[in-house]
Length: 200
Image (cartoon, rainbow, N blue to C red; front, side):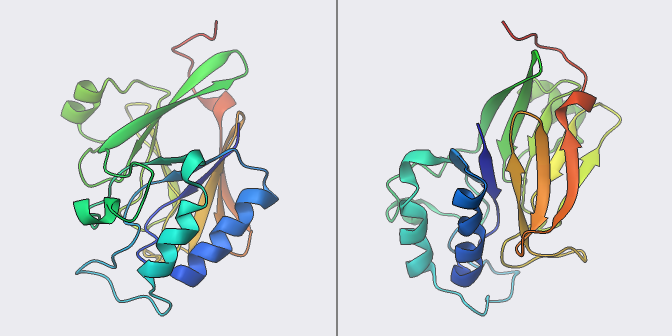
């Protein structure tokens, strides 16, 4: 299975078109959306190609292949323009990889914190688990002392922290970060993670 991972679209129509072009190019099976889909939010500039009424139908084309979680700029009214569920606070994806199962926790990033002992315990996160989140708009792979790895695809529309607009691709071997022009900037290999769930 291959997953295209997008976060923090914030109504940017042109950037979303660019990112979605990689769905077929990389022969993806599913589209993971990490929230902040339509609204720019009170702390962000309005994107130059801000057009949430066009973003919605673009995403609807993938409705049967979408796994989505809610961002802090998403609201219940946004659900009215989508036929796929997009208000879950978090989700899990289990990825079979070389005889082990890699557990991937999906969240926007404003509700759960992988660096918090309390949240890790409450959510059952273990060493070798991956947290994929957006929210900060800063693309990167961040390893912690606890052994949990955070992967942030950054924002397709409003990148921050000196990173470029981009997305992530996940398959059975790992997760790779890309810029919107298709340049690879970082990669996490699942083989480097400790195994705590054996594949059966």
